[in-house]
Image (cartoon, rainbow, N blue to C red; front, side):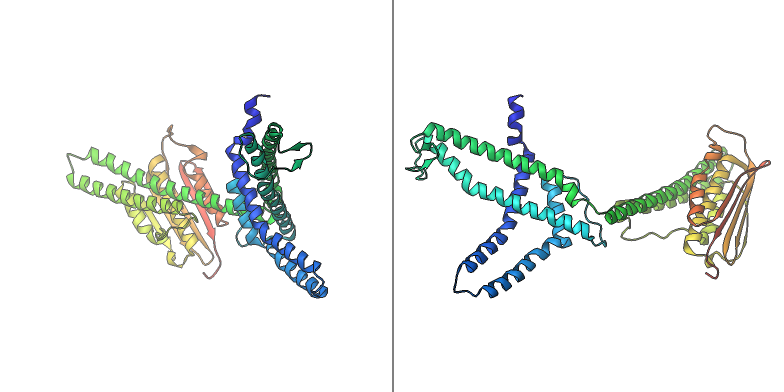
Length: 414
């Protein structure tokens, strides 16, 4: 074994941090020690009524034991173990009270922390001064602690052996602290680890965050994809008519500017959601719904894609979630028609008492390398939106047409 390997536990930064953790336990154990000493003295005195002392002892023991089983001390121990021991422990799930098993494990951990810390503190105040006194004798430092006393086979004149004994005591204490710290690291996940209910709550929270991020990705894909498609079509048409129709070019540039501005608004909204720890922005941006359908259709027409829109019912009567997801489905359908289809798009929107029905129909364009086919065209996002609301989606080629049919149910009468 290399000398560096032998000395490593004594000089490692992790050992010192773990020593601080153990000392913290010793400090916390001090009130309990004082309490034990006080009651031991009262029990040893004959002038103090024993029944009274025993009654006070029961009350004091109850008060001293109750905090060990509470959630607060467990949270503090988890924070200390994570910071000083370097153990990756999750915080207790908010809103979930610990069960009996978790409280017992936590109480056992706190008890072991206090006992081991108390032993380390006792060693520091007894063994360390004695060891330093032994070593000081070698250099002629008379501390008055080793004068005429004998320490087993040694006395104050055996300075060489006393020095060796002092060094051995210090090294042994260092290894003891390192060993207790390593034991604490291995036991912390067992005694402070999450309970089954906390694990389930953490998994549910993680699933919620992933679902929210997935929804944000869909929002960003649909919004920016539509804006880029409109801008590309407008720019291409403006290039063709640059010399012949300056007025059309002016309108195209305005449409490109407006599409880019709305895409930037959506991008700012999504980034604001992602920056917040809880997924909520300080000032929520309004979501686009089917109330904005006329504006969406007008922008698509301005990009050069004719749209024949027919609508029955009032989209204002729709639930917010259905209206929001319906808007994004129509937006993605128009974007795909502009990118991959040809000719006008027939858009039908029917608001019923218990469901929203959408249909988009356009002629198929020439096959292109960029055409993602069945697995693309934002169909995954459409399916997720429809599945989220328990609806039905039918999409695909129908002869020489590309047809999208969607039904989104909602509670009747809303």
